[in-house]
Image 1 (cartoon, rainbow over the protein chains, first blue to last red):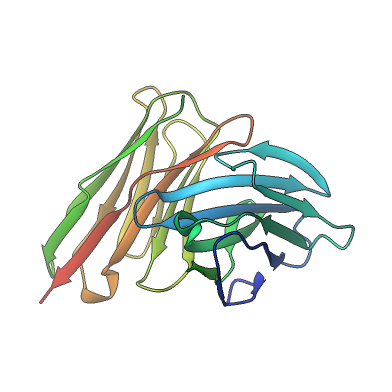
Image 2: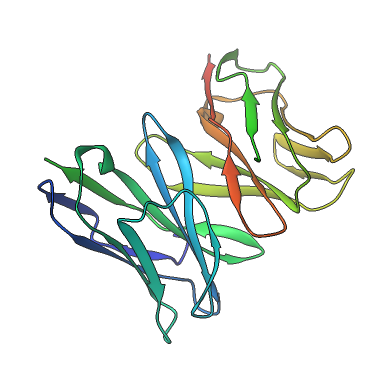
Length: 109
Length: 110
């Protein structure tokens, strides 16, 4: 158990919909990273927050957004969902090494 | 643009044998990570390499970093079945951008 929690574990939704994925980092970690893992794109870095501020952006689509709250939990919002957004979404928190959460499997039908 | 290439992508080994996974990257970086992922599971951090010449070992796995050659290696010694998994390297740049390799799917056979 990495200490990073993610909810929900599974999410099934339809094209055009909007979903929110939630991540709670390990106690004491200020950084949260979001990643997408799919068969065709592999593992991709989406975005990083540090103590509430956006620190780095990777291959995050404009339809996606994230934020980190004062209690350090983070949410990833995915809107206008497309079939190709079906993937595993991981968050990780960092205190030197990165500690990954169990992931949210998103299926867009 | 930062690119990370791993090879091989698939590796089938016999138990007891040694092998090396290679991770090449295209630009200077701050940190290099190695992760393990079991099927259907999340990623587990194995090593973080910070500087040229860094070498870290944990059990049968040893990782090294040559920043001049932009190359990291993950060496497997006397493989056992429990090491079967997918191994990823990832490179983090100064601006915290991260890039992952495609992963090496390792199968260790008796």
